[in-house]
Length: 176
Image (cartoon, rainbow, N blue to C red):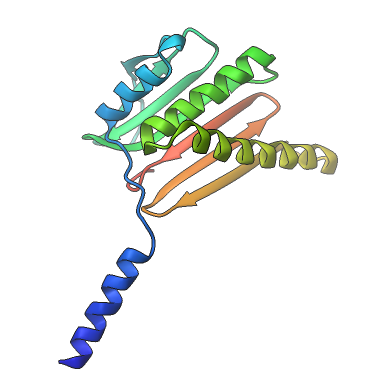
């Protein structure tokens, strides 16, 4: 009996040791992103996906009036993956819009405030630029910089930069 209660106490202590980030459902994410980036004219449309595998995920193309595009994948109302992209080289306005759009996506997906969203993105961006510069200096065949951040609850963020594009990715707990 004592062993059973010890196991239960350890399980409960482990479960509460790390807070799990609650990620928004796709409907809530879409509405919050539209509202948070309303000046960018965010629009969602069903994407046409050609694949050899069967999937029950829905894919959406996300377009804006600025030079930022994205893709959203959902299974039911579960957010699987969100990816925002810009082409490189990008001018200062496009880069600023990309950063603002990414921050709005983080606020919509995770409910973070603007300061936390910008802080996480700033740190990731600095790392990516450092890794991209190092890749150029080494003379890598594929010149790229990439960084990831992982949070409790199975939420992952990624930022990838190459000489031709830059992408910001949010992957939900059941993401692909």
